[in-house]
Length: 280
Image (cartoon, one colour):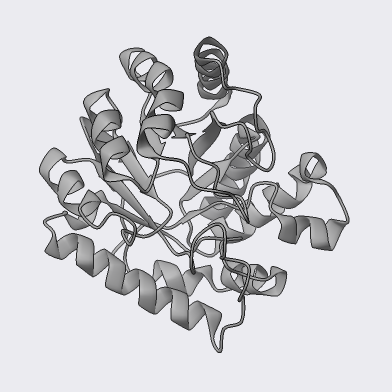
């Protein structure tokens, strides 16, 4: 396996020598954990800058909820939620990732300064996003999701979940490469909580090494997910310990990027775990 040390994004690179933390900023009224808290642009920008101060390398901004059962929104409404956030953050030197499946939204976000597109549909909803990222040199996260948010939890059965997710991610990454993306632009994400059972999420985390063996940097997003609650018996806002445990377990198995709500604690946990890993 080739070890990736940098992620090529629009306007520069993100070093992968140490764990990369993506701070979550949902400017939506209905996200499962923090919906409606940051719908005002000024509040959202202020919060994002606090996440950077706490140790976020990237701010991942979403204007459409992807929680189980979430209803879709149109591109105009989605961009209306995002438009007052992306450009002010990019102007301040923040590396912005736009969490969208829509080509129109991705185009506008890149024009406004976004450096990364995080596509939870894995280029199925808008395949032309791959060509857009290739043309603009934008970083691209390809995530595995079965179905769509409204339906993804209807069927969480797999014969071999890690094998199927690895095969799917391999094919989607190759699709992006055929569209012109450089290997260095691509990050893959197994999609914890997106069309998976609690046991399936745990198996994917345990087998992160098989995903990393594809040769692309691996991002995981366990933050406050329901599989943690099923183990700990805790509501979403009390799952920090489980989130940190999942991040550290994934780090030890080869993940390098971590999408989280609680940036400060995650930064500390991952930095200490990484230091121990290097010392060993």
